[in-house]
Amino acid sequence: MMQTIRITWFRAVAVVALGLALGACLPPNPGPTGLYLGTQADIHPTVTPKASPVTWGSAPPIDEHYGGTLYEGTPIETQDPRPPLLRQGDEPLRLWVADPDNGVKSRPAVIWLHGGGFAVGIDSMYALANSTGREYAQRGYVSFSVEYRTDTTLVGAATAGGRPASLCQWVQDNEDAGDATWEARREQCKRNIIAAQQDVQGAVRWIRKHARKYDVDPSKIAVGGFSAGAVTSANLAYRSEDVGTNRYFPGDRLSVSKSRVRAAIGASGCLYSEDGGPLTRIGDGDAPLSFIHSRYDGAVPYECIAETVGVARSKGLVAELTSYCTERGHAAGLYATHQAATDEQWTTFLARELDLYSGMRPPSASPVCTD
Image (cartoon, rainbow, N blue to C red; front, side, top):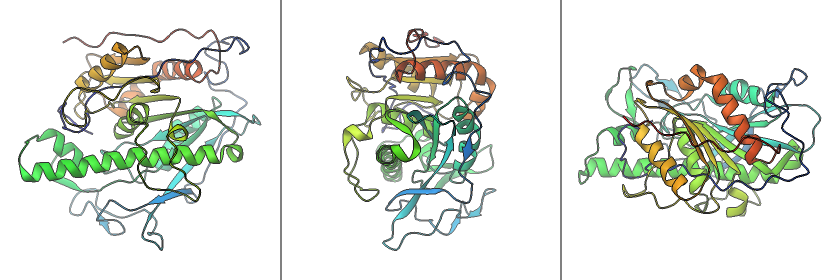
């Protein structure tokens, strides 16, 4: 995703809401192999077929290339894999479910969000459901890999990866306040980031509305993501009051309370400032957060998540961060390198913050990298 800390739109802050008191009636911590913590040999998840996603809602498209050739003239040029616009001109939004299929009737859920700089990754939702989603389903979580609107605009010269940067990456890497082109693209990036946030908030409301169908406990919904998905995860933690005006499905009431998640996890994301100034949106009632990040990440600057966590902790919120101070891995790659440690971090965090077990270890407050 982004590189310099000031996109003049979001800047670092990952807050995490005060942990709710754990009820004395809950079972004791069973150790790392227990349900919701370790994978269960007797759980065999079912995953929505790739070709048969659930359409959970719709919204006006934000991509001028929708339905045509995407990333034209680049190594990733492709025909748009997204479904046709609906009759009223809205873009259908889909999800894939990895269900534990374990007979439990009221289960915690994790909404998983792909990365891609809010521009690429539009055909990766099934893979996310069938990999990380499936693995967490085998722990007992109902996993939803949710689609959000993307803007496939690429700008600038080709990067080392062989394609131009996403619009938001370009804005971050080429800050030039006052330049008309930069300012226009900054506003477009801002719109894209807000659209992703509000789309996922709509999905949270939809899942709550259909909680009985999916055997989900509506009070135990978390969100997790990678790169742009982790940025969106942080936004759901700290900007939950901004639900927008789009009604995504029949009966959608745009309720702030029904748009909130109980916890946020992520790899290589942060909360960006709206105006380049101090982070001021973090406060009481925000969700707890648990992230990982490398010091030399070339896409999302480490300084952003360090500031996010610092502000959150200064306000008494739970904000966990595991920093890899000599590494440069990003998002799914960083997670793969440290998967065992990260899964232990995230499942312990979820078990505590979703009130799944009592007696879990307290939140970590690991220091940030100092050089």
